[in-house]
Length: 173
Length: 191
Image 1: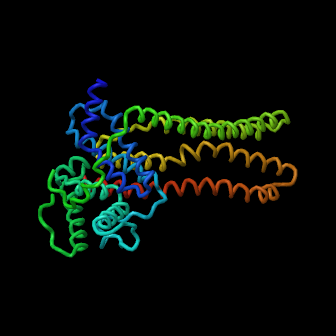
Image 2 (image 1 turned 90 degrees about the vertical axis):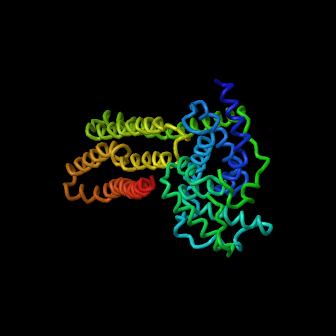
Image 3 (image 1 turned 60 degrees about the vertical axis):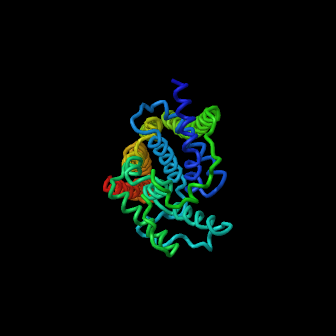
C-alpha cells in the first residue's frame, strides 16, 4: 500500500509539481508563505493518496487537493483585500502597483495580482485555464457546471484580449 | 489538456519538486502541537473561570447565601457545557481535500454557517441562567434592606451591559451566518 502511494506521489510530483508551485505563488504573494503553502499542498496530497482508488484521474485528484488547500489558505487570510468577482473586474491590475522586471514577467505579475483579487471559485477556474485545462476538465475538477466555467473563461479571455489590445487567438480551451 | 493560453505562465517554476514525505510527517507533528497549545489555552481559560466561580459559590454557600451560591454554580455548569461544545465542534472537522472544489467550499461554508447560527444556543445560552439568577438574587438581597426601587436602579445598568454583550455576540454571529447563507446560495447556483 505504502509503495503504491509512494509511486503515485512520485508520479504526481513529476507531472504537477510546477503547476502546484505556480498555483501557490499566484494565490500567495509572500514568497516564504507561498513556499509553505506549496508544501501544505504536497502534504495534503500525500495524506489523501491513501484514499485514492481510481475514482477519477490522478490529475483531477491532484488539482482538487491543491486548489482546495489554496482556498482554505485564502479563507484563513481573512484580513486580506476585499475580493471582487470576475464579472466586476474591468481590467488587469495596474502595472504601476506591481514589482516586475519587464515584459512577460510584468504580464505574469499582473495576472497573479488579478488572481489574488478573485473569490476562490473564480480563482480556481482561471488558474486551471491558464494551465491549459479544457472547460470539461475544469468542470470535473471544480464541480462547477460547464456553463459557469465557460462564463468565467470567456470573461478572462476578454480581459486578457483587451489588455494586449489584439483579438483572441481561438486556440484556447 | 489544450494549448495553454499564456505559454509563459506554464514556463515558470519548471524545477519545482514535491516535498519529501518525511517532511510531511514533521509538518503534521508541528500542526498537532499547535492544536494542542491552542486547545490548552482555551481549557486553561475555562478552568480559571470554573475555579474562581466555584470558589465564590462555595464561599457564598458557607455564608448562607443560597441563591447566589446556586447562580455561581450555574455559571460553572454553563462554562463546562461550553467547553464540552467547543471540544465536540472542533472534533467534528473532517478534511477531504480531494472532493470537487465547489463541494469543498460548500462544506466549509455550511460548517461555519451552522456554527455561527447556533452560537446563541451553544456559546451564549449556557451562561444565561446563572447570570440571570445572580442578578435576581443580588437584587432580592438589596431589596430586603433598601427596597425594590433601590435594588432595581442599582442592577439595571450592569445587567443591561451583561445581557447587551450577550445579545451583541448573538446578533453579530447571526448576521455573519446570514452572509454565509448568501454565499452558500451563490455556490449552489454554480453547480
